[in-house]
Image (cartoon, rainbow, N blue to C red; front, top):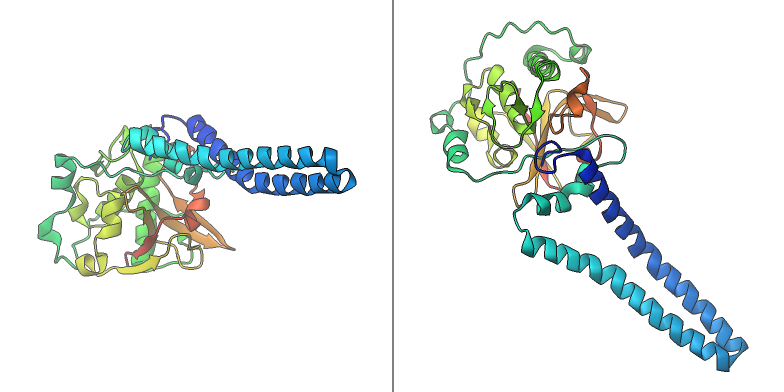
Length: 307
């Protein structure tokens, strides 16, 4: 879901994420405080049974009310959000804000799989299902990125193409729009999966032309059968840092189809850098972003190794 799309701006996600973070902290701290206060009230009861009895009762009562409130109210809010706004942008922002914001200035942006006749009819070209070695386009790549220093062959070419597409976005006046972009992309809109789709199209896989592939499709299509690419599963919550290598595509989605996908550029000293079109805040600089929480996101996913 996009900061510049469904949730409109980063401030909304920050507010929601901070609210949910505070609730989580209170759910940890409140039981501890209640136990400590009740324990002290029993000490008062031992000192003065007549006076201490009322203190014990009051603290037990207030403690139970506090515990019920801190655990039941968030559950009630979640129930209301899902039952009254199911499928809406508001519901999605509420669900995903705390996974998109890592409080270090980096945002993770997901495209929402929108079920529309146009996107369904244009996403998968059935004539390409048995296409294993597509003819590569001659795009005249001439990038000299330092991120290709340790790679060779097709992987080097793929990274150079990814950089060229990235720089065209950085300097092309693009804005974020989720789920309804065409490939190859052109201003003014792009999202995470339309960027990846365009990189693969420019690399020679012409079946990506037309309506963008969504993250759900990147997750569900068997790319080994389709193109002979390698797929490596990634469990929900698993840190993929030691699995990804430069040139990899990392995609994660939840059962509802909300997901995110990035193009890995470098892995150095436990730090993963990627071209990530999940938020317009990412392409304010030429360099790839440092991947934050997404590398260990709670959603299951897989690594797609194209070459």
